[in-house]
Image (cartoon, rainbow, N blue to C red; front, top):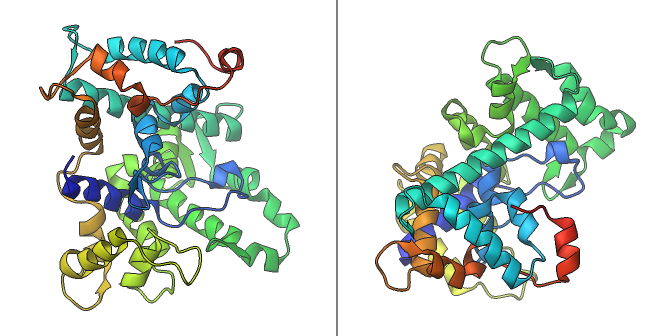
Length: 327
């Protein structure tokens, strides 16, 4: 994979992840734009390739967890069954189109399962819609037990009050018929705005807000870098890739050369035309495993590089079988 392509993936993921929400926040509050892409793991974290990103892109976040702890032998066995499913025309080869379709499918499956979980939790009677008052009480009812000061307290730049405000605006944006109730389709747009073209402006707004730490309406180079790299101490030297990103900010991101990124420049950065996440990831996986360089994968090539696709931590095999469902 070329440096330009890997850098594009890094930049896209970093931009859309924004500020990470603190782990202490309840699960229902921890939904961010393009959550599937972030998964709390950047593809190139700290300039180094993060293999967990590939596992989650290939399997989906939930299915990826089922492989954690399996022995290499069991990982290969289950991966072999997946390869048979990916091979749509049953010619014994995995081409770019088939792998791209599989990755897109895992993304759709994750979103659907995630929405079903949250929908059921907040709508146990399975009504056709959920109103904002019901959702707010279920998710944010705990705020009534917090003092105004506690509601304003920030952890990693995020306060409960700000999350509530953001969710209220996102809810209203997803509510197309303006009845303050969301159908399941609208609720999907609310939880995963990245998957709905009508929510793209909201994703841009939230991303820009996350990056704009000092709230001056523009993104400085330090804010740009700060979302990718945070030194552990003041004495830490920035790695070379960070210096390259500072240069990229000046030469490629800051189009009007005013030293900052405005909303239009951020939009051009995080939503490049014709960028297809599934195809980019498929090309990357083929590059990693295609030993004979014929731009397609045999089952043997995939299984030989099983760690690229699914990984394995090789813990107790009996415990792993007890924890995970069979394919």
